[in-house]
Image (cartoon, rainbow, N blue to C red; front, side, top):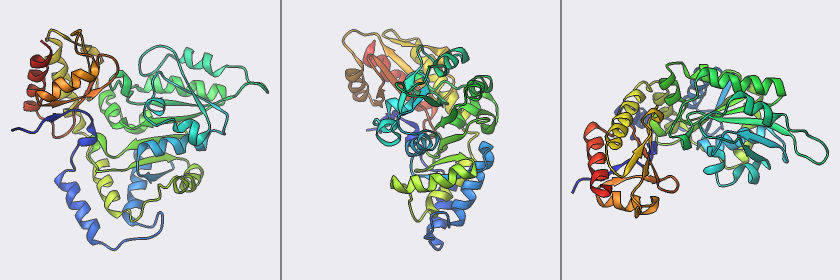
Length: 346
């Protein structure tokens, strides 16, 4: 029996042969004890800082931890943080902004990856006095997961940064899939980071490292981040194997365009099926959100139906499923996925 086509997440991307060779070489090299002593880690942090246009960068176990340390750096307990609707820091980080940074995240109204600058400006203008918390920072997510991986282009990011500067706010970019956004917008990753105080990226997901993330910012902020990372238990050691994989990942991301092409092929295939609705124009990167319109197949049951036909998907709200393409998902897998949807829902 064939293995299922697993479209739940690009976390499932497998390391390339070059990455495996780099990790094997690192495993055979001497280990290093210091928190930033390993030469591979040092090279990775320099490479990430250069790519993102920042002074310094620091290795983290996960992008969630990097996001939370960023909020701790840019705010004080009791502050408000502005964000687009349904950001990852709210939907998928277990209440960490409140529990760890002591802040409340205010989601701007509407849909989409990036509300207009006027919406940010209005929310940032909330009156602060002795009885009300201050708006201290904003978070932008690029690509925006809950909008189906929509990228925010340079004009969008700079509109948000202009509001931050005008209102004296700090700004963090949750760039877990930033390289997907860069490929989709045909710009460098650094072009999408300009003006932010901190930027977090994942090294796994589409980039294919087995784990790891980076937080980039000024040298002063990263110096403080080392302490906060350690406080949260993120000072992993030794780091050579993880860093070796991350270095290869940061030098090999042009292939993400293939993932985007296959996501669009999947969307086009699903759009022609009765019982399934897909917004093809919203498929800009490697995520497809499909809405099941069959009355007796809400999201939870829909995943079980698909699994019985050899395809794994992620529930994404009432009647909605998320499907993610990544290196290792080929054209045959896309065809199998479309056939599974046809068998399950039409």
